[in-house]
Amino acid sequence: METLRQQSKPDLRALTGLRGIAAWFVVLYHIRVGMSGFLPEPIMSFLAKGYLAVDFFFLLSGFVMWLSYSERFKSSGYGYFLPFYWRRIARIWPLHLAIMVGTIAFVLLLITTDRTTMGYPLNELPLQILLLQNWGFTSELAWNHPAWSISTEMAAYLVFPILAVTIRWNNFSSSVLLGLVGLIALLIHAYFFQRGHVTLGSDIPQTGLFRCVMQFIIGTILCVLWKRWRENWVIAGYFGAAGITLIAGFVLSGDYETLLVPVAFSCLVLASAILAEAGNNPLACRALHYLGETSYATYLTHFMLFIWFKIIFVDDPQNISPLLVTLFLGVTFLTSAILYHWVEKPGQKLFLQPSQNKHKVVTAD
Image: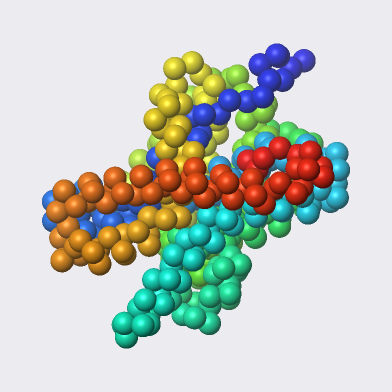
């Protein structure tokens, strides 16, 4: 019999805090070259792996989607597909559109001042706006680079109803589910190995879709396991230790990234989810939670912000002063907060208002 705590709405603020940390890890990854003049080499090497934070996002996304929507699909079947997909569009697209509008204005300025627009191919603009750019239709990252992962997430949302309706993870034993996680991780490794890639960040336009969908599926499995082990902190300790050990092995060896990272992150997401409701969890503090709440805005805006910041303030992009780096980080945080409150959240409400009036649904997750 479930306990009252298991029946209550889960409070996973700690996972939101982790999402915020991951978003800022991506920010530091993209600006790391400019900090090479004052950061020691070990820290630079660490920041050079910041692209792996995206893999954490993919796992967490699958986890949250299963937690939020699996029961609705279980009761409504494919009839819930359109409301579900519209809610995901409402969650993602308004802020993306705002960033694209700003980027298009920037490109028009480049054109009118007779400057190069390399990196902003106009023929790809419809794909970029519709978030289809990373479905195998392009050969290079372009426009707002971080949006590639949002594009693949939109594809993963198409897969989710099939998982929720057709494949009932709840019918499998925990050992089978763990085996499936390992098997999917091996498939990811084999896919990259077959293409001659040793890192998860290789050839993103062609590999990113598979990378996202596979880890998204793992995330749905992790949610089922979390529901079974929600109060078992001993199991959380085992998975946390396993995840840290695998990460340490990867850092020390530098090998098997495409296998070790998905498995390690899976262990850490599961352990973090189990411990998320622990009292006084530092990851659930107000500051980190707010970073998590604004993480989508941070993730989606920082890349173009850095380009504009360098044009205005930076003489040598390879050697940016600590003061300017601090200024940029502050500008990124402030911009993220403004866009979160004035664009992202109002945009969601605007998109969902007709369906709220008709179907009485709650706001987007």
